Length: 272
Image 1: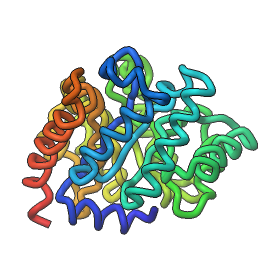
Image 2: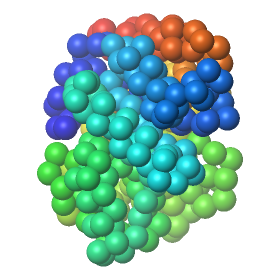
Image 3: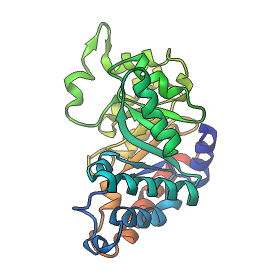
Image 4: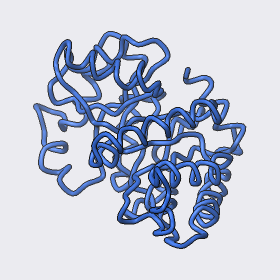
């Protein structure tokens, strides 16, 4: 998917909501465990209930790999359902991959060609030759971890390398990568105040913002510091939507929570 199409969806739906599909068999409603594929049954119900209030879905790959072949098949069914039923949705493989040369190319082929995701999250620690293979794919996007929402982000990401904090150096250096026009970035909602300085480095790039909701991030603060003329944000909510109810009304409750966030986002995008 091209960025232009994503921006059109944001303006049409007046939403920049991304729904995280962190599907855990220990947390989904118990009645779904009777299904042949309970993970897919849960995902399908959530997608059908929320698709008109969001512009993206982000399966966290670990939640599928944890169940081996069965989990991988559930992931395949989920992304196929999204691509066939709601092709306007931007899809993110939250895989946090990153390795050198041919290994990165194989990761890229797995998620971009075999599974047909629009984008993938990448850890940049190994540098240029671990990122550029992902940037070679036309119409696909690489979402680089820049400043994450967890407490451990302060262990390395905010330490200075010369005159700049490491996360700023990562963002600045990545702009020189071949295919950098296909880069997006991860900045956690719990670090919203950092977005003002980040926008000085990447004024127009899309930023994926996890951490709104269960992790305590503020949507208003994220928009205050990070929004652009094309919005330039994908704000993710996972647990706050998909696990808002553990009963048989889980999908309807998820819809209500997604609509609440969309209505808050509408106030931010309706000026464009």
